[in-house]
Amino acid sequence: DGRALVCGWGDTWRVKDGMPVGLKELLPKSGRWKKQMKQSVLTALEGCAQQGVYLDGFTPDTWKKCIHPGRFAVTGEHILLFVPQCTIAPAVEGVVELLIPRTKA
Image 1: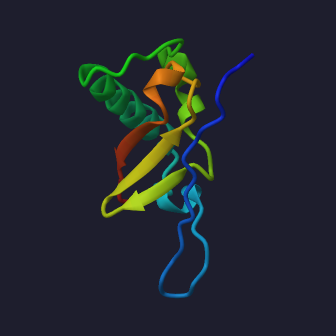
Image 2: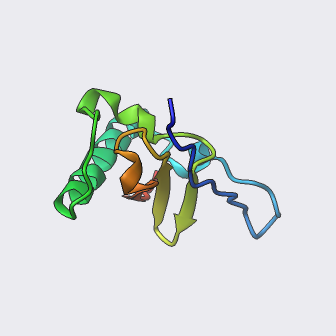
């Protein structure tokens, strides 16, 4: 269909023991993490839209498209989610990056 397959991918490691860290390890242990993550993703997407990113085909019900265990990086107290090109925005927008605050368990 001619869509580009561009995406950000992160390798996140624990310095202390040299082991890889999964996205699930960075999320709160409470059962409410999905609700918190959904709200954080929607807030970050609203911020993208305010900055002029055109979100195409995204609805609040499809927020899980933004979450993938390998498409993230950690920046201080935030999780940076990489959303593949053409997933929620046209190809011209490139890879959409969402900065999500890390919530303490």
